[in-house]
Length: 274
Ligand SMILES: O=C(O)C(=O)C[C@H](O)C(=O)CO
Ligand SMILES: [Zn+2]
Image 1 (cartoon, protein in one colour):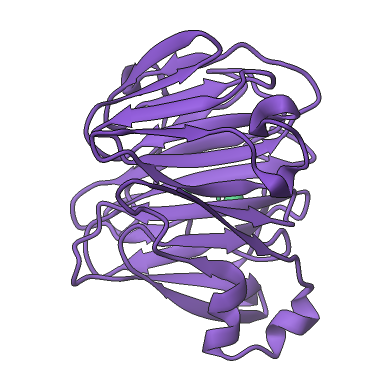
Image 2 (image 1 turned 180 degrees about the horizontal axis):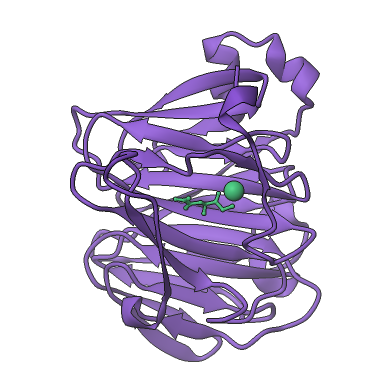
């Protein structure tokens, strides 16, 4: 079963007037991982599609998605798939890939229908593409590791880059995930902006009774969203994106937009946050 929800893009002046429920209806998504289902969100932020597929031992096929306007989803798109569950298989373009927990599979434009099976809990990201880059399975050990932060500032972490120009080529999709040293809870702080690119965060490996307080908004007009395990934030290009957990967690970040330069960030000074 396939479900697709559309999220429209809104400007910061409109977002400023939203209450908690309004903010969540635009920028927060939950319930994306359901047994035997593919649940997608089609966002109008750089037309990123995100969602979950949980074959639960069976098999699911991702092919025609009406919102994309093409016979098959990858006719004019590329895709990254992160497995946050047990090992599973993804088949596309005539190849079967065994995707273990923590691996990322990149599928280039024109790969055809995507079949997901086995015990995987697949987080799906897709952006429009203008050419076909080689499909590739990227194992955790192949990811680029960037160590950041410190225990003193509660943000000691390693950024694992999978879809990144130095690891695997893509048209515009950048993705990876960030893991924390024990006791560090702050992600992406000090905060930054990149108005050229939107970003989406999936929070996972968070205990059911813990939460991440995710901060968004323009630097002088911040708001927060309370995130449970496997919830997603759709971060508009004009918004900071950072958070602090009440317990340990991991998060997958993904971006699409004007460039694939991960370090193209406009840092926000602490004194400018409100
Ligand atoms: O922990 C971090 O810092 C990040 O993971 C940063 C995100 O990847 C990001 O915001 C990239 O633009
Ligand atoms: Zn960012």
